[in-house]
Amino acid sequence: MNAMTHHEAEDLAEIRRAVHALCAEFPGEYWRALDREAAYPTAFVDALTKAGFLAALIPEEYGGSGLKLTAAAVIMEEIQATGCNGSACHAQMYIMNAILRHGSEEQKQRYLPAIASGELRLQAFGVTEPTSGTNTLGLRTTAVRDGDNYIINGQKIWTSRAEHSDLMLLLARTTPADQVEKKVDGLSVFLVDMRQALGNGMTIQPIRTMMNHSTTEVFFDNLVVPAANLIGEEGKGFRYILSGMNAERILIAAECIGDAKWFIEKASDYARERHVFGRPIGQNQGVQFPIAKAYAQMRAAELMVHHAAGLYETGVNPGAEANMAKMLAADASWAAGDMCVQTHGGFGFAEEYDVERKFRETRLYQVAPISTNLILSHLAEHVLGLPRSY
Image (cartoon, rainbow, N blue to C red; front, side, top):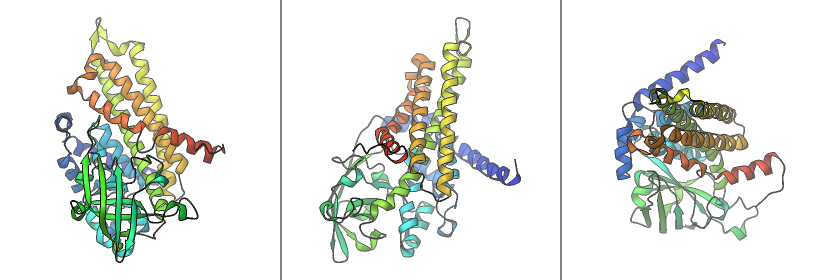
């Protein structure tokens, strides 16, 4: 191994150790208590913010760490591998991408340092709507120009962390769909100050779900947003969020790898210690083979995650690789979770083992942030040249 790759590997290992040490302060009991109350992990998010981990992808000139996506992926993976849950704040890492890549210098100076320090939380991403689901181009929320403002009407669903965020990145239609040349045109991105918007045209309703994900439905009724909060050019918003979505998929794939590692380690430990019929259950091939298979599946997915992150860093569009990484990693974490429950038997369902909590949490990524069927459609059409299916 040459000095450069060794040096880089050591940097990542140092990040891994630091995240691990921080997460050790937030053991299973912390997460179980939050789970019972469906509460937001404020102390955990504050600790990650203070340590600078959530500012990983913000350049140093704007107060961030200026790290590459691979390093950010290591942070998210390690959070999950220790039994913590990064979904409470992972969006703080990547939503700012739209401001960084497409915002004006004034917007970057105004928001990025405060996002980097944690003074401002940008954790809400208003894209999905009840009627359109993942068909982003079918969204109905409108933003109509009125002098120096835009007036926003509509609703968003599955807007996670809306109640715990200061800012929201909002995608809305500024030109009616029947008036655009290309169907990817006519959508614009706005930065909404939720502190001002709440009660002034914006309403948030929490949605109780299978896992503690702080997700909500958000309603806009003549919400006034200053035109200065438009990111980039009007009508080009769909393109702006695509690169951020690739980063999101790669980081969530890394979280799934972390989950899989947690399940594999937890199952292996239990299988070594649990004695039935006078021997450790891990001595039985019927127990050890599923653990070994889950490990092999995780390692294969891990390679795709690293590959996708590496491509993203070179500036190419890793659409296919980001999608495959997310799908393969989510499949690996779900398979590992199922195996871990099975290895534990009845104890897998007991709250105190944390297996059932992580099992519920990792199931989400079969569905979010993009459904598996859409990933397969993307690969079929754009990689394999098959006819478009929708």
